Amino acid sequence: PSKKPPSIRIVPRRFKVGCGINWDESLDAQLGVACIAPQQRQLKSLKELRCRYRSRSADVEKSFRARAKGDQVIYFCCHGVGASFEDRTRLEKTFLRLNKAEAIKNGDMKFWTRGKGLLEQPLVFLNACQGGQMNTIFYESIAKELLDLDAMCLIGPQIDMPGVFAAEYFNRFTEKVLKKASKTSHVGPAVRELSQEFYDSNSNPLGFAYSLYRGIDSHIAWG
Image (cartoon, rainbow, N blue to C red; front, side, top):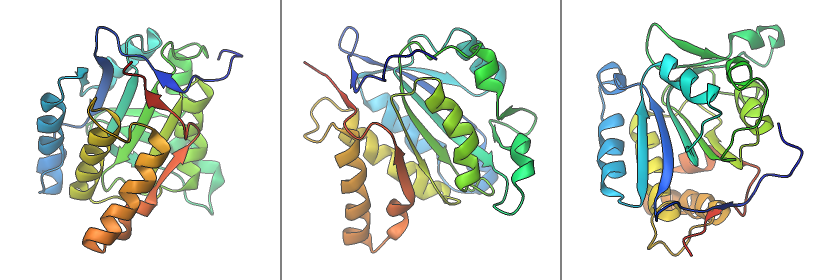
């Protein structure tokens, strides 16, 4: 990774933010709830974004071998599995799964990029929908790997997240951070506001389970 500190600004190119959307398109069928579909509608409605969609680990690998060129925002919505607190020897089994046959394991992204930093120093959002044990060990591996590869910041839940809520949280996050007309735009305040809004309006504490790692001042510099 580069020696320079990560930037806190994403500068749109030709008025659009490049997004790498990596997800399991079969989640809705697996979970029996609408998770991917509402996010698809949301992303298509945001004209400020230029999205590349990937649903196979081979496509994610191709992107990372190019050091995720063009992906100013990287989003994962899929299953994720981490080792338990009691069994720290199972770190090699920490992985993201885009479908039943393919997994992105701890260390893969570092290997694919040859240990070099991601070119865009992206904002990374990990959204694991009912994905197994998503605990601190998971973030000590997959998330740390992305931060070590110069991710600007990283957001992710600390617990198994119901698919419906995961989708709603991401959609509201994009409204605040990735929409040009938003008055929030900075990641730190957006995460704080979302946690409070879900609790105040719906008595739902799940928003507090989303943690922000590095980059509290990260934002889109619309100019």
